Amino acid sequence: MTTFHPASTLLVLLPGMDGTARLFHRFDAALRAQSTIDTQAIAYPAAPLDYAALEAFVRERLPRDRPFMVLAESFSGPLGAALRADPPPGMRALILCCSFVRNPRPMLAPLRHLLGLVPFGTLPGFALRQALLAPYATPALQAELAAALAQVPPSVLRQRLRAVLETDASRSFARGSLPVLYLRASHDRLVPPANAVQILRQAAGAQLADIAAPHMLLQAAPDAAAVAVAAFIAGLSAAQVSA
Image 1 (cartoon, helix red, strand yellow):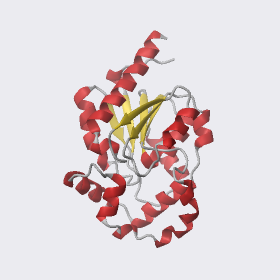
Image 2: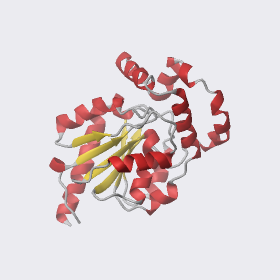
Image 3: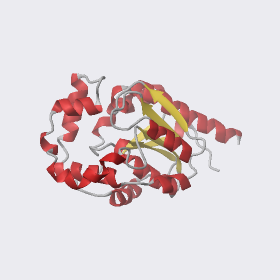
Image 4: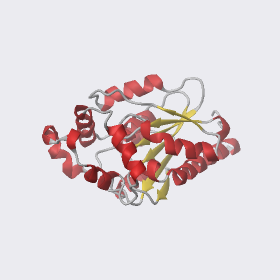
């Protein structure tokens, strides 16, 4: 087994529904302030791609010259599950942040055929704030969220939501063996708390970190998230050294 240390670890960041990777800067700054962990964010194409196409896109951009871990935020959970099921060389662990490996709201699955009627380009800011940031919304966070979503065509957001409603990567995720950390937000209004329980059952030895935050955990509570991630990475390094 190849040993890795926090000083040489690279954390690959896979973004949420916006796919822009513009919203990681607060977490990245917090992580760098308290550790020597490097980060690499992968932004998705502004095109209506399904999870299979996005997986191929991500795999082509993963590092090949050093060990790394993957943090999959929200929408990117099924991509993280696919990578854990068939890990590329160098991947050592998976972190899921307010995420899922199958549709977290199965009752909404029948509505996927009505997504064409959802006015993604004109959704009111209040609705987005309530779903993603409440009760931790600030003017700065709201502006950053709006700027990121403005970069994504409504057709792309529609396709990504459809992909979420149709996905179920739980079996492939359960076949994997890489260590897992789940970051759960105590005020998440999109992904139910029980979702983390399901993931913990499917990944033996998975760790859970509960953080007081909304769905956009990395943006609203970057310091707490950085502490949890750095501790997880340090724990894996220590375990490998002693093995």
